[in-house]
Amino acid sequence: MPLLRPASLFGQTSLILSGAFLLFLVLVIGTVVRFILLPVAERSTADLAALMVLSVQTWAELPPETRPDFERELVRGHQIKLAPIGDGGALSPRSTPYLALLSRALETRLGRAVDYGGDPATPGWYWFEIPMAGRLFRVGFSAQRIHSSVPLAALIVLGLGALLTLLTSTLLVRRLNRPLARLVENVQRMGRGEYPQPLPETGPVELASLARGFNRMVQDLKRLSASRTLMLAGISHDIRTPLTHMALVVEMLPAEVDPALRRQMEKDLADMDALIDQAMAFSNGLVARHPEPLELSRVLAELAGNYQGPGRVVETAPLAECRVRASPPALRRVLGNLLDNALRYGGGRPVTLELECDRQRARIVIADRGPGIPREQRESVFEPFYRLETSRNRRTGGSGLGLAIVRQLADLSGWRVVLEENPGGGTRAVVEIPRDGAAG
Image 1 (spheres, rainbow, N blue to C red):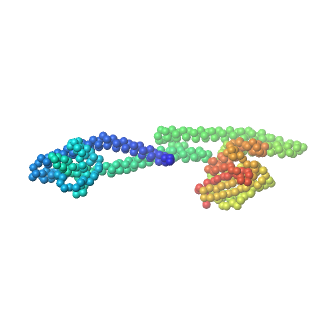
Image 2 (image 1 turned 120 degrees about the vertical axis):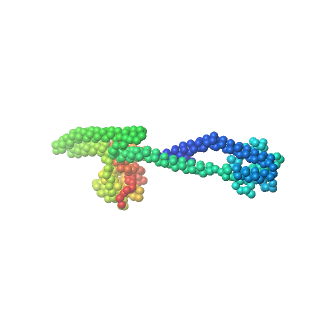
Image 3 (image 1 turned 90 degrees about the horizontal axis):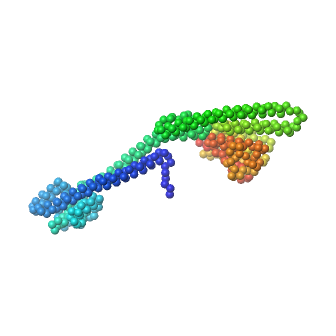
């Protein structure tokens, strides 16, 4: 099972900082335990073992009448109880790291193992059985003597560390994320064909350099776009001037010129002019800058009516109401180019126009009954000047820019355009428009 890794910058930063903090905490705790707590505990248990053995030895050497006073003094001064074993019951097992260290210290002093544990008659006390002078003594001390809140302290340290990690992550990510969020927003705006305002060139050196490089790139793109527009406008003017002259020459041809030849020349000139228009439109982007609420059923009904004519039949299924936000010129250009293709290559058969709508998106389907497009070429036809070798050539009217303009406008508008196989033969062009923020 793959490890889950946070996708956000905040989550990844928090994970890294938390991991580093936990590793540091483990190393600190291990170092403190090994080089501080363990030696201190060993010295403490050694001192307590010496006191316990000395107390038993002293008690055994005292006259019987002074032993009660000595026992009271042990309790008062050292919180230690001492008594020879009489008829007391067996000790119940108790196990803590401190008791184990104390047992080892007693074994070192006495040269033999000692039993230890708790006595139900004295709850809250730990007892050790120490042999001395042929007798067995029980020496005990209160559990409060070795009481510590190590688990609570560890929880407090972990909690404070987690809180500190969270605050550090929040401050760090906020400082890094603000300029990165602005950069992402500007990149998305550039993807829509807009030129964003310059980014502030402040903050850490790396982010300032990134912002400076992005601003320089935007300025370079602006200059490149302006130069391209000026160049294309000049080329368009230079080409259209002789085309206009040629059109005038065709108009002034003598009446005895073959009418079919005249019509062919006029068609060729019109095709060249249309090709220039399409090339200019593709180069300029035709960005849909001002989307507005649209009722798709009305737009499609109007479009279908405009395309009806001799040899051109556009059938529409019942169109339900479906409102979206879109640029009217961009939508009409996309659908118009797709309808042009469907009618041109549909073999003279009717073209079907359908509308599907749900809460998330609207789907516009334009289906023809022509020869269709091979699966491996359905993406290639969206490339500029790409034409299929069979039937879709310059002679049939294809310039290779119609679908390129469709894909460009769809990408800039946030739409999705795909070509599919029509179950009845031919091609289905599907335009998907998100309905987020649609009016109505």
